[in-house]
Image 1 (tube, rainbow, N blue to C red):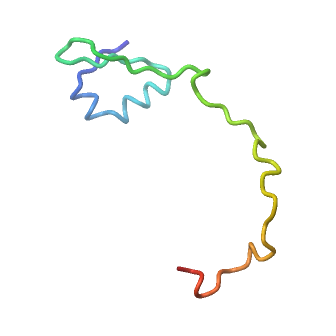
Image 2: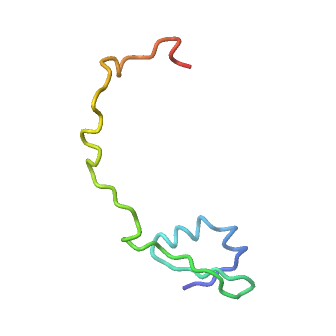
Image 3: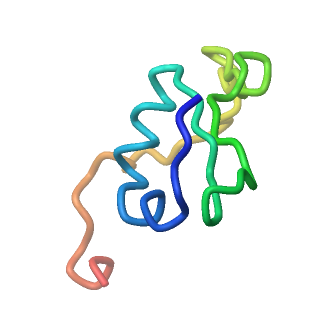
Length: 75
C-alpha cells in the first residue's frame, strides 16, 4: 500500500482512482499519519444487474412513438 498525503490525493484524485481500479490500495495520510485507506471494492460489493431484468415491463407503446414531434411538442 502506497502512502499518499491529503494534498496529493486532492490534486491527483483521478490518477489515484485509476490505480485503485487496477487493484492497488492507497493509504491517505494527514501529515504522514495514516487516516484512511482507498482500495477497490470487492466483487460482492459491486451491484450486479442481470440482463433482461425489465423484459416485458413495457405494457403499451403508442403507435406514433417513432414519429417526429410536432412543432408545438418540441419545447
